[in-house]
Image (cartoon, rainbow, N blue to C red; front, side, top):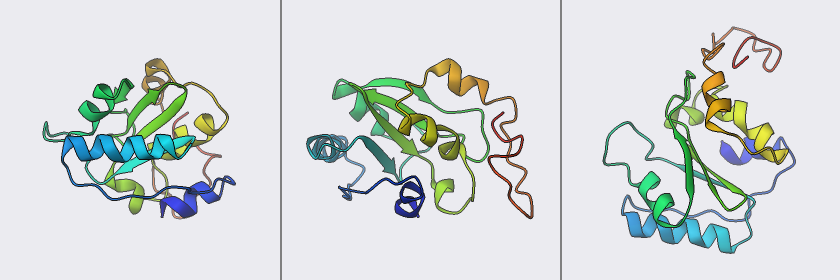
Length: 146
């Protein structure tokens, strides 16, 4: 699903790995992605509100800057955005696998345009932050995230 979505923007997946929920393994896999010259790193599978999610801590321990762990957007409230140097790291909630449009769709084009997204940018998505799941989706020509 994610490969298809990023390919719509002309991107190519150059690295793909699986990790356990162990913090050191998460750090190793993110480092491998950084070493592969990936311009954007997507982490999926463990993003949740519970304190057992080790992804944010792994990113911080690697020297990453955590911008937000949460967004005022449904679907996609548990979006994580961080930067390691100039490269964005996104932690994607499970909804990106089954919902047509999520917070990921709001940030992806901006990141691909080399815009450095701030906490304030994410907070502004609260106005229009509810996807209405219209029978015929007209995104981005709708109120979602506007």
